[in-house]
Image (tube, rainbow over all chains, first blue to last red; front, top):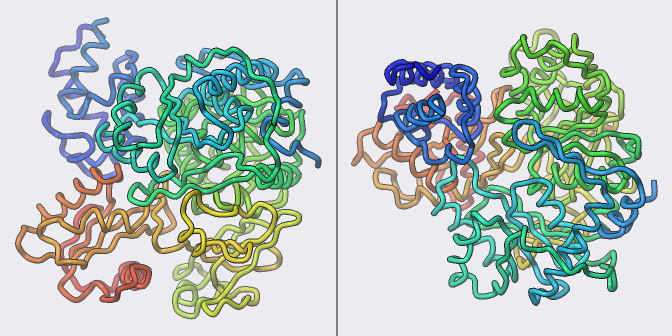
Length: 83
Length: 557
C-alpha cells in the first residue's frame, strides 16, 4: 500500500480508531490518543494490530510510545508503508 | 505431591529432565531452552551478581520485559541467595518520567541494593541513584555472563523466595514477602488441584512480574517439571488469537488468564482466524486475579466450542499475592457453578439469597471453588466472628501459604495479617463448600488485571482546581461487564463542568496511567463526609450503583 496518499492514511487511521474505541469519538489529526480519545495501553496495541492488517505493514513496538497523536500515528503508518 | 523446597532446588531437579521453556518471540520466532540450559545460565548470573558485591539477603529489583532473560535472571538471584523483586517495565503508553518516579518510590520503599535491567532502561535507572541511597549495583541482564557460581549455601525454606509488588499502587507500594516455604506449599497444593504433572504443557502470555504469570505458570511448570510455552503480554494483547494458536500448535494442557483476557479473545478473534484452531488439548483453563463473569466465560465457550474447547475446562479460582497465588480452586472438570442472587439482599442485608424466576434484579456470581488442602478459608463479620453459610463477610485465609507480611512495612503487615490469619479485604460467602467472591475491598480498582488504589487516585486529585476540598471519591464498579473506574466529585464551581471532568481524567492518567471510565459531578453534600476513606467510598459507590445520585453533570459512557 505504498501508494496510499497521506490523506488516505489519515482517513484509514481515524476509521481504525473509531472501530477500536468503545465509545463514540471524533478524532482529529491533533487528538491525543490517551488524553483526548481515551485509549489505554491494551487498546493502543489493538490499534497497532488493526493498522498492520489494514495497511499490510509491520510496526515496531519501539516506535509506538512516541506516537501520541493521530497525525503521529499516521506518520508511523506512512513510514512503515514506504519501507 | 512432593515438590522441591526452594526455587534453586526446583531448578536443579528440573534440569535433570529433558523439559524446559519454549519462548515465542517477535513474529513467532521460537527459542527453546531446556531447564538444564536455564540452570547453566542462572549459575552464570549468580556468579556475576556475587562479583558485583551483592550479598545474601540483599533485595534486587528485576526490570526485564523479555521472558527468557527475566527467568534466567530470576533464577540467578535465587541461586545467589538474593531476594528478587520483579518490577514492571514501561508499557507502550508509559510516560517515562512518571514511570521512573514510581519506580524510584518502589526501590526506596524496599531499600533495593541492586537493579537488573535492560540496556535501554539502564541509563534512566542510573539517574535514580541519587534518590535511592541504598542502591549499589545497577547492571544489564545481558552483562551477567559469569563466571558460574556454585550452589554452596543454597537458600533455606524459611528464607524469602521473592518479594511480589502488588501492581498499581504508586504512592504506597506494597511488597509482599513470599518465603520458600510459602511458595512450595502453594505450588504443591495448586498443582495437586490441577492434577499437574511433568506431562503437562503450560501456555502463558501473562507478565512475569505478576503472581499469576510467575508462580502460576513459569514456576508451577518448573516445580512439576512440565514443559512451558511463554509468549509476551504484548503479543497477546496485540493479537489475542496468538494465545490460542500457541495452545493449538503445542498441544497446551494448562493455561490461566484473568477474565478480561477471555473477553478480549471473544471480541477480537475473527471468524477467519478460527480455521485450523484445535483447543481440544486444553484441559485446565484457569481464571482468576479479577472478578469472574459467567457471561464472559459462556461467550468464550460458545465461540470456541467448534475449535474443540470444552466449557468444563474452565477452572475458576480465587487468590492473592499475600497467599502466594491461589487460595481456592474449583474441582477439575466441573461445569461452572453460578448463583443468581437478589441484588438488594447483597448490599442491604449482606445475605446471598438465591433469586427465583427471572433474574432481572439479580446478580450472578461464579463459584471460585474450595480451599486448597491444608489451607483454610473462612468468612468473618464486622465483629471478627465467623459467619454461617450465605452470609457475606470478609474472606480470611489461614495455612502454610499465608505470607509473613510486607517487606519493610510493619504497619500494613499488622493491619492485614494477624496471628497467621490473612484479612484479604475481599468480600464473599460460602455455600456448599464453594467460595463465592462478591465484591472486593472498596479501595481497589482492577482494570484489565492491573490494580489501582482508590486512595492514590484521590490523593492525585487532592490539589486539582475546581474540586471541593476532600470531596472526591474513586472506586471500581462492575455492571456484569468489565470493570470500570469511576470518580465522583463535588465541583467548587470555579471551573466549567466539561473542563473539570477532562482535567480529572488527565490528572489520573498522569498519576497512574489509568483512564477513568466515568466522571460524575454531584451537588455539594452528596459525597459522604467521614474521615474513613473506606466508609466514604462504600457509601458513595452504593448511591452510584443504585442510581440514586441527584441529577448533575455526568461525562463519559
